[in-house]
Each structure stands twice: as structure tokens, then as C-alpha cells.
Image 1 (cartoon, helix red, strand yellow):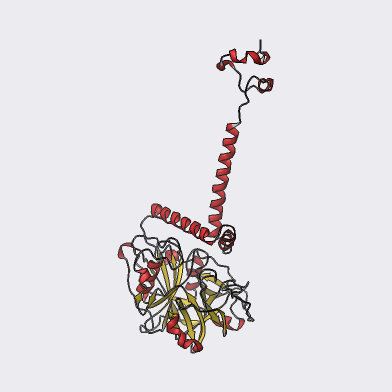
Image 2: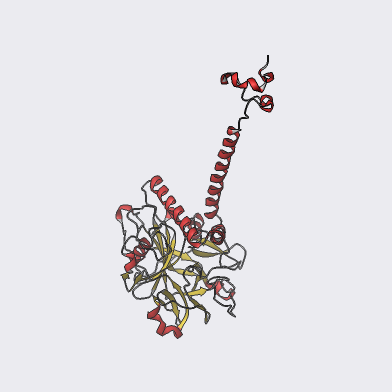
Length: 417
């Protein structure tokens, strides 16, 4: 007699080993409890987890490949989760990435050629370069941390620029963190007797507390493009500190007395100083942009950077956050502008690296993977057009960066005098 025809009243008398628990008809007969599809649920759980991991990995790749993706995700998450929660998430991811780098790192410091995009190497090879007189070139400083350095550390190399047979731009690499061979600082030195620096407000940032009647095209003006040689990023968004800016005679955001200020006087000379040191000269300034507190001022390291746990330069929760950062600095005589773009550095490491390169006054600009950049411009194949080339590998930018679509963030550009 088939088990499925046994009345349910006798079910309790049947040994459990003989009950066909997976028999669907028996279950309908009422004497065998249906078995939940645990295997199917487990399979779907594994698939969902794999899809989630895949999505996170795809997002991580997109953040490092698509210039606008990272900022878009961060801004949307801030609206959903709140700024502090997103900061915590960003710092957690940065710390995880840092730990992974510690594990996979092979202990070999990269030199300049290893970290230079092939297109820049190729374009530089085709342009004439005449080495400047020794009294105008930056002084080689050697390695800051010999145990994690390359042969190129602290050695200035000329960079060819369009429109000039003499080099007005030099570059070097510094490994500023003795604990991380993969922490790199690329420093670019500009001879201010031969170049001029300009500030441009973004089409959106820094936001003004009330609408300003001022044009904000967010691109390099057409009249300056024939002399354009380079450009680099500006500072934080207004919501991240309310750091002020004035450009084209218009104050977009009021100055903060505790902020470091990167400024230009009418004669083209530059200053990096705390706002109280510049306030009396405010009427003489042609533009200024504020940042967190000066990292270095008159050669003195900011007291908040003397310890390892420094929180005021883009790491509000964990002062040891290791991220990409950018900075500007001036030589003691004010004749050389230093621009630094780092990889995997703390604020303290960035400051020490800029100081080692020769800067005595230093202000940090923007941070995180998407924003810091130093770009060089080359003449495109199409007459009258320019194309941007990253001066360091892995920078995020468009080939018409600061030339085509308006930049929503502020930036600086460099022209020959």
C-alpha cells in the first residue's frame, strides 16, 4: 500500500524514517508537513551577495575611471544618509584600501617615469627643452625618507611646455611617509618670473549665500588660451568649511579669519598666509581663495600637524585618513610656486613633503580621488584646439578639462607671461 494513501490519523504510528517528507501529494493530504525550500533561499542569498559585491566593485572601478561618477555618488549619499555618515563611509573605504595596499605592496618605490602617463612622455619627447640657468632652477633636495625612496626623489626634472623653448616648469617626486612606500607626492615648480597664475570660480562652487550678479563660465577665457600651459584644481565645496573666495572683484564667499588664504596681488605676485596677515592688504588683492589652516607658514609646521592625528584638512573623523590630496606652496623668496598632487597620504605627510621640496608657506586645496589634478596642455591635431594631459598617472579629467563644459568647481590656470 502506498504511503500516500495512509490516513492521516495513522501518521503518528509510522516511523519518521519512512515518511516521504518531500512528497508533495502527501503534504496536501495533511499528514506530512511541507519542507521549506531552504536550498533555493540559500541560492538566492548567495546570488544577492555576489551581486552586491559585484556592484560595489563596479562602483569602485567607476570612481577611479569616470571623472563625474565619484562626486555624483557622494553628493547623492549625503542627501540620503547625511554628510557625517558619508564622511565615515569614505574614511572607512580609504582605510580598507590602505590596509590592502600594505598587504599587496612589494616595497619598491616608483620613480617619475613609472608614474607618468605615456602620452605625456611621448609629447614631451617631441618638444624642445632648454635647461634653465642654475640660479632659476629649483635646488635638488634628495630623498626625505631614504628607506622608501626612488632615485628620482628630490631631483628636479624640466618639463616641456607649449610656446616656450626654455623650461618654466619642473617636477619631482617625494615619498613623504616612512611607513608607506606607495605614498607619493608629485611636486611641480613654476617660475613666477615667466608665468602668471589665474583663479576661476566654478559655475556652482564655491556657492554664495545669496545670488551674485557675476558671470561664472567655469572655463579658461578664450583670450588666455594661446598662452595656456597648465591648470590645477581649486578648494573645497562651500558646504565643507565655508572657505571664502574672491575673484574678478566679486566676493563670492566671505573670508574666515581662521583660514589659510592663497592670494594674488595686482602685480601678479602670490601669497599664502593666514587671513589676519592679509586682511590689511585686501584692497590690493586681485583674487583670493581660502583653505583649511595653513599647513606651513613662514617655514613653521602647523601645531595641529605635529602629531599623527591631524583632523582639520579633510579628515573630520579620523585624522590619519590616507587619501589623494593637493596643495600649493611658495618658496622663501616668493619666486617659485609649488603645486603638489599626492597619492595615499595623510595631511601631515603632504605638509612634510611640500616643505622638503622647498615650500615655506603651504595651503592644502582639495582632497579625495576625483578632484586633485595637475594638467598640461598641448596643441591638438585640429588647428586652434587644445587637449589636456595629466601630469601624473591615474588622474581623473576630460581631454577638454577647463576648456569645454563648464567646471562646477573652482580651479587655477597658468599662462606664459
